[in-house]
Length: 123
Image (cartoon, rainbow, N blue to C red):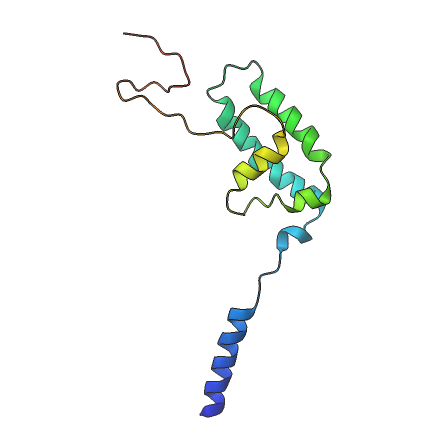
């Protein structure tokens, strides 16, 4: 009876003390770039949905891909898409000094259903 209790307690303690393996660090470079680019493409879509920048998608994707391909392995290890706040971290690292903030959903004004970022016809 005591041996069974000891085994149960020991297994519970060992489960609590174990740490998850950093799977992201073990992925090959191409896999990391692919996953980051997938998330980044969605961020570009969100950002360009209400943008008046001509060729917004093309410009951001081209800039993002060129920056991403030139990143060091150490920097890529910090860009795990599963971490908390990954969208902001990835946007900042990939876009570097671009003036645009990470994409935010459009807000509507209380009197109209038109997003504040767009010019809407007045009534």
